[in-house]
Length: 129
Image 1 (cartoon, helix red, strand yellow):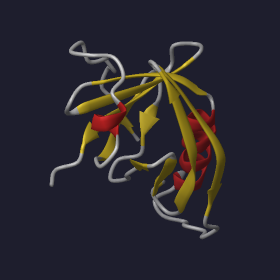
Image 2 (cartoon, helix red, strand yellow):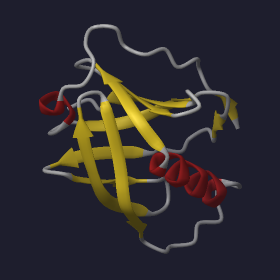
Image 3 (cartoon, helix red, strand yellow):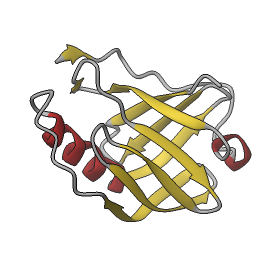
């Protein structure tokens, strides 16, 4: 596992559903945790639906936004088992549970930060096109 960089929220604006949708987001940091080197976790938002890849499995669900508040629900995923790299399945489970606890977001055109109530956060960069 590699140490994750510090997650610092963007400062340009808080909450814009138009920027959020139509962009694929790649996880770059988990505050106070680590990401297994060489793994990915992606998000895409469209019309109240969220989907992505958790490293081994694809996931899907719904989201709702009100101002800077965001909530995810109905999160489900495929059920593939991946043995490599070690710890990937545990990381997937942790990140999907974390996603279900998100309450607030901040974003600018290139960075999305999702916060839980305890201020722990997931940091995403807009994927290159």
